[in-house]
Length: 385
Image (cartoon, rainbow, N blue to C red; front, side, top):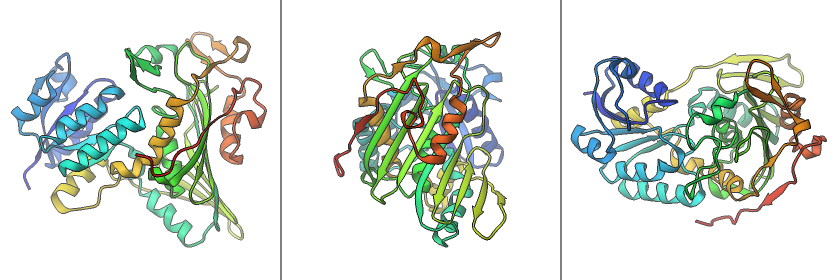
């Protein structure tokens, strides 16, 4: 098999990870970095080796390099148009999460890509973990009984400079376009997508209702301390709580509540803890399939894609509910403080609230957080396109 030519759009910021990953697969003989699309060309050091062709014109670069695959890691509002630019040229896609800033843009992207027949993988790397099928097998075997609900917890720290990393950072809208760069939709989007997936709620029609509580301690438009509760067609709830204002950073996780046990999945570590009646705690460690490697495998051997767009429809319902909710409430000054010497804001007690939300499937307001905003109910019309 000859190495597939790949073009990367967006090679700085998180794109640096993609540069390193493409170079890794290049050394394995699977791909070749044929082009980089950036407004300012990369140096050889930034490119991690010999410079490929570079251009700020994505379509022209795809044409001139003969790319078979494009990796799109650009600002959220550009995802749909760049994905369609590639798809109309027959170029297959790895599209960073969130795949679009609104459900309408997601449908435009997903339907447009499907019409061209190209393959598209959405970059929820956690869904490449081998722990995901292992957990599904445990659930199917009845290891923890019937699923009663799924919780997700993400307690991270980000300094104030994080929200100045790009013009769109921390924004809900920019120049009239949706951005929706909130804690649940971007930095901790994996917690939402993974919790939904492990509960069997992946497609848009699997969601029957959504409640959101959105707030921010930082001086931004979007949310940095928020929670969401999703009602599902399966009859259970999925509650995910997130903050970028934790006292200390913790590993994010998803918690499956069963009638006779529970499974905790630390998705960045590919590690699970199984707790069930009549057994001691059982801990397991798994490997992970890289999503670009899976896309290449799909194109060369016909292997199934791990995260096709339709399997992120439920996540996009959550994005849409957050987009259309009232603007997040600024937390009162008494609810947060700056950490001396670190230029970051902390909401005291939020670490425990995030864990309690995942544990009880409750929203911040139900847990007694004095600063919790009003709950916004956003009921989805099942089947709406």
